[in-house]
Image (cartoon, rainbow, N blue to C red; front, top):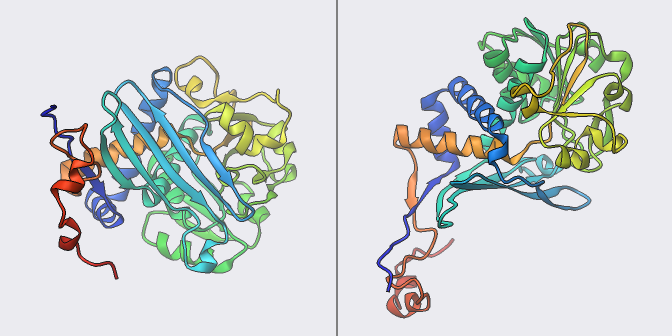
Length: 356
């Protein structure tokens, strides 16, 4: 009979994450997650990688995103349902797990809705810091929904953006974003069109939600030297860029097999040239070739980024003493006698509070 008892699992709820971000500071979280992501991409070959597993419907998608290195396995459950706000639900909802590779023991169960917004913004800003023109200070932000504040603040903190032009087809979304960014060190201007917002911008971020083959950016809107951070095109049948924008740019992606299916490059031929971002970091591929080149980061989100965010939140929770230990897996005296748990605790249900 084994004497080993599985360790309990750290649980970070939404309430825990809010407290963690408030105490650590959002800027520190954005920078910290960006640093973890960069470190992960710099050891790209140490990870067991695969494209995410997705179940699509006519109204949205539900996905699982796994990845592992030699010591830790991570996965994220995440959905994308653009119609959810009309039902009082977030467009994106997520949770994730970290587990030991050597035993499979789950060490962390965490909310990832708030964390995904942080990690997506951190990844965007990291890519722009590497690919955009040095000294970029102005950004157009097209799509002003739930992730827009995080994108704006990450670019302010990590890239040095100081001027922000906003546009959304819903004026209330832009007003919400402008109000939330007040006092954050950004000069914010609400624009009447995409064309007005992008004119003269160093960086253009598109983070729209509609599940459709849209053309948010067309070739005539693109100016020499722009960096385009395309975030919203992240599943089959959902794009934001006109093909001509991609054809005229150097395009960078996270994990090519996944982006070919889900990113804006899904509309391009299979041999359309792209560069995986990790190759720029390790010097095996060039980034921006000159001040006049247009660069595109075709971001769909990759599991390595969730791994980085989960490890950052776990370590920060330990630093701040935040979280709750839960018994997620059975802890039987004899691990081969799972049935014995039912026999040994016949009145367990009586001790549990009734569900409302």
